[in-house]
Image 1 (tube, rainbow, N blue to C red):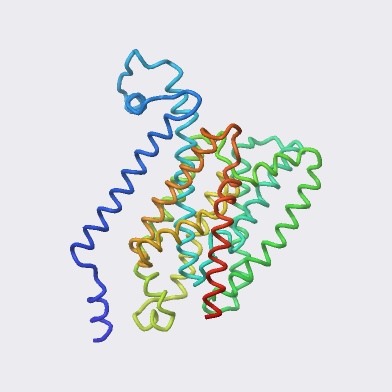
Image 2 (image 1 turned 90 degrees about the vertical axis):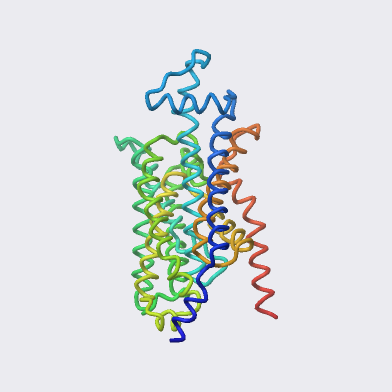
Length: 357
């Protein structure tokens, strides 16, 4: 009786529901405008109206004679795949960060806490080394595949190491991630040593970049990141209830172990897909959920979709800055680390002070 009363009271009223829908629509429109504006920026400036003409031309429409022949190639083959990759990677990492922070009950958790990035980095470094040794396979396909395989194998290793924990506690998962990440870090160092003079290719991938991304990369992200994010958002209500504690969640009929395992695997797969396309891009999954939670509160039904859209906007803006404004293009992972590092210190300092009060 008490449980039913609590759920009924927590249901949002009509004005709050309309405000939530309005916020999501506003963020979606802002993201679309940002994509169009970013697509027009670069060495060749292209106006928004011209961009829309080119996009409609892809579905059989005729292009005005005033549009130069090179502009459709610049938009469709160079800029738009890169911009869409940055957008999807930002959204995927942000949603994964929300899940890790909620499930692990740790404000410093992000998609890299379980060592997923180290697994992807090891797989990509191994692929680059094999290509240097003369393996006759296309690098544009082999590196993302090996990075994805490394991330998934790491995820399996973390779960296997933490398996004795009946409820997959946050401490056992984080410790397992740290142990495996340390081993993989040593493996990456060994690969760098073996690569000798060609080690720069591995270092460049580890710093993260969207240079040269293609429609194949966009397709990989669409097929993996979007379904994973959709599945996570379906479990928003369970996430809210589980934040009250496992006993409360069990009392309300939530199978906490199954839901926790499902969400960790799903968010890790989304992270693996992102890292396999972009390389290592840290702190997006840490910054965005904290920022959105500070503005909108901890309710995951609003936090998850808003984090996805804000993550898209943040990484799109960061990539546009490195591509357009800086005199020399900076690897995007370096820029996000420069922004996220001080923010990480702030969160860590704040959590330390709260423990002492």
